[in-house]
Length: 125
Image 1 (tube, rainbow, N blue to C red):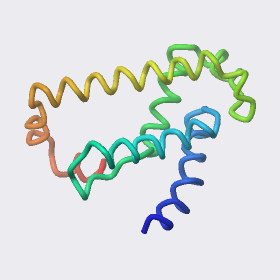
Image 2: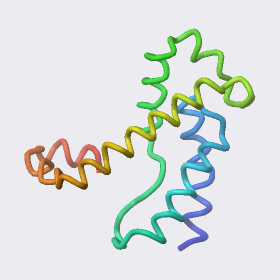
Image 3: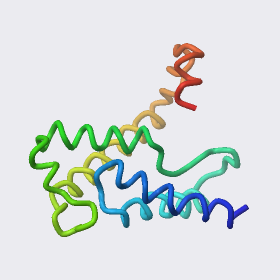
Image 4: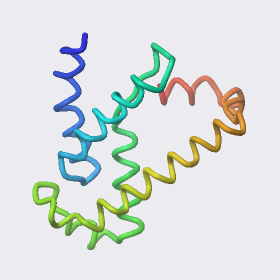
């Protein structure tokens, strides 16, 4: 199964990086680093970890809103040296997303999911 995941994950993560407007190497980072960390730190065998299309589109949307469409368009994913500001923004966004997840876990706010409708939950899973 590891070979199958590897064969699917490499092109998929590179495509998601391009969808987010990032250089492809960051797609590879976003696919393998969480898997390695999760293997060492987590306990659930059914949890899916890795890049998804929704996260890639939201990252691109936030970058376009904060940097402006013109400055965000200057980042060429095939030339990583043109994407310094864009990459820094994506890293900060990922850091604050992680902080929110840690806060939600610390204060046991997962019970809020019980108030979401089945339609909403099935749309995101």
